[in-house]
Amino acid sequence: MTYWIILALFIYVTLLGIYIIYIDHTYISREIFDKTMEKNFETVKRNEDLIVGHINKINKQLGNKDIITR
Image 1 (cartoon, rainbow, N blue to C red):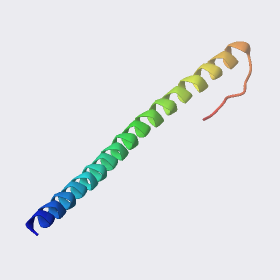
Image 2 (tube, one colour):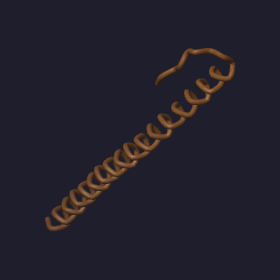
Image 3 (cartoon, rainbow, N blue to C red):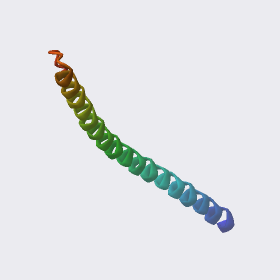
Image 4 (spheres, rainbow, N blue to C red):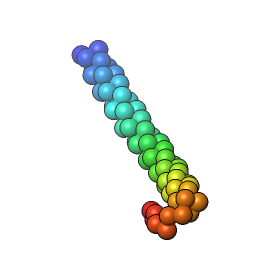
């Protein structure tokens, strides 16, 4: 009888541990993903500003009066 109780407790604790590790891993992965996406968004925004600036400079050198705004 005690064998089955100990076995059931062991299985319960093991499953609980796996569940907690899964939740923590998912949360940490999501947090890292959000930070990475935020960093990438800032980089893309900065790159777009640089590209628009270069295009406007080239247009100015070519004598075009069109200004591209982002």
